[in-house]
Length: 203
Ligand code: MG
Image 1: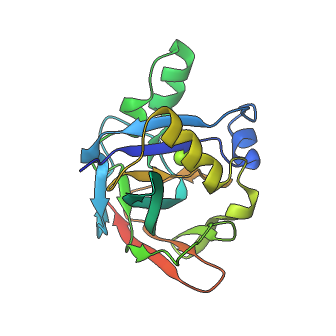
Image 2: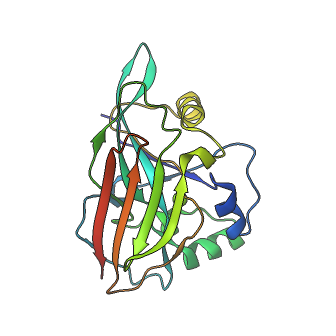
């Protein structure tokens, strides 16, 4: 079973701007090692290698078996694309890959997995995160630069998509540093009210 963790960078214009990046002309794709995945963790441990770990809350899609040779989204969850911003800035400066900044163990926590409604196009999902009860990020997939159908077609054409693959679809603006002792609540919610949540302590 395939289990790739695809991630899309700079998929909300306002987030691209807050980090001083240009709005991309094609999806910005990177991957996390599978050991980054953590299912409904109660605790997120900050790694000693970074002094500046940011939350990036994202809608995560989970692929099921292909149908008529097309990729199928079987379910969704909230996910946090944890990012060691200090390591990422250094990598960007040197033109090096982002694996160390984005792919550390446990750096892809996801909340409860919810079955996707038949034919769901994911065009109106709220995506948000609170830190110690204060909203830090709140956005809507309406504002995605590359829509979910576009991302599915792009990833399938160039890399392949199959059962067990995950896609982190990009983060809205408001990313900020996490500190030990904080509590987070992250969520994604469909227009019909189907919701995935992740509640965890930072240690
Ligand atoms: Mg991200």
